[in-house]
Length: 114
Image 1 (tube, rainbow, N blue to C red):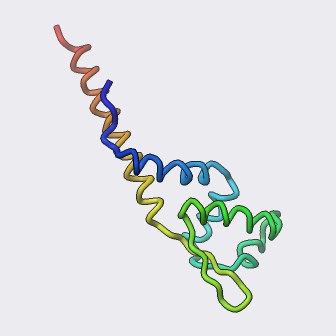
Image 2 (image 1 turned 90 degrees about the vertical axis):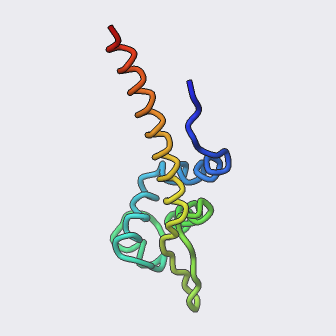
């Protein structure tokens, strides 16, 4: 079986992204930032049952994965999306999908041979 056409560097960059995306709270935070734009921790905590401390911890995981960026404004920290990590993850998944599409086409061709 052929290896997908992805670099080891890209694969390693995507590991923390996929790990960070594996949590419903973090996915929810990313969705809110994508829909509503940059927000403070206080804003992100409002209208949820998640504590400010928990939101802060989730944001730190997302920041370490490169999915969000932090900007200090006075005493508050504001978080916004950092799309490059998501772009890399998308590129990696597209390479894997292309690999499987090619594999399935070869399998189909082999199965349909007389």
